[in-house]
Image (cartoon, rainbow, N blue to C red):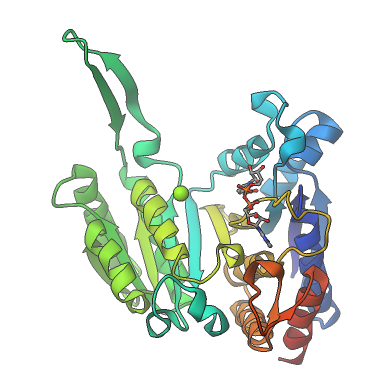
Length: 366
Ligand code: NAI
Ligand code: MG
């Protein structure tokens, strides 16, 4: 079957790192491993320049229909003065909202060749491969009421409201269990049931969802604060961590520092399954458009390439190719190839294309 892929390269280094992904897609297709229908469109500042909006309706429609959307990065100083509703990030936010991408996946992978750059000792992180599944469209960032009011005594009162309904917890739990099945088959759910009603419901719904069809996956529950502690004490004990919007925001930033380089991190945002079992999905590097190095051919393409690996694993039905691509990244780093952001004395300094092609060569030979 042909897979429908939408490429939104975006601004700054987006098109440069996307260029390396296109070479890998072409190789996969030429070897007959998968067949693609690839479309491209604009998002961010480049879309504003072309259409006066950060993403066109036509591009959103293509994203709705795609098996996977791959996005480079958006933004840059060129668009600092554009009206707020048309700023580059608005394109990304509209995609997340219109596609209802409620599940944000942030892997923390520590490639052995970069383990000495981690915030932790090498032995704690060497070979680390975990994914944090963060609920992205609910919880305290969106719950009502959300306000600051004046009190009679002259002080102020701020209110944010944590709200979760059963269906929101159930659908994110299912994402986590399904991901675990193509990984290490273990899920750790984190909440604060000891002090929060929403934590209690989270725990109950995750437990019930597990019983109703996912009992082959090992499930543990951990209080979110204890999980934070375990994440820096012994991170390799985890496989998939599922948690709410607020805890997930914090824990995924903590986990990113275990990996050695922010510039290496991919991410996925997943939506609901449709009637045919297809899940809307957007894959993008965690980094931005890096205007300081854009156009120079020196950007690190590995976060973008690792985002393609996630798409192969979670949307394109080829976890085997995803593993091979991750192995190719690992082998390229082991060969000593380093772009400027991860370079240190004694390693080979390479540009975007050289790094991408080294990965391609390893991938081709696997
Ligand atoms: P940034 O991630 O673009 O850059 C931070 C630093 O890391 C820069 O020194 C940059 O050169 C370096 N860097 C980032 N990615 C790299 C790569 N692949 N290879 C080598 N070096 C890399 O974050 P910054 O500077 O805060 O934001 C720049 C622009 O990107 C802003 O307009 C911001 O709004 C936007 N942005 C977009 C995101 C997205 O598209 N999802 C996420 C974060 C920021
Ligand atoms: Mg954050």
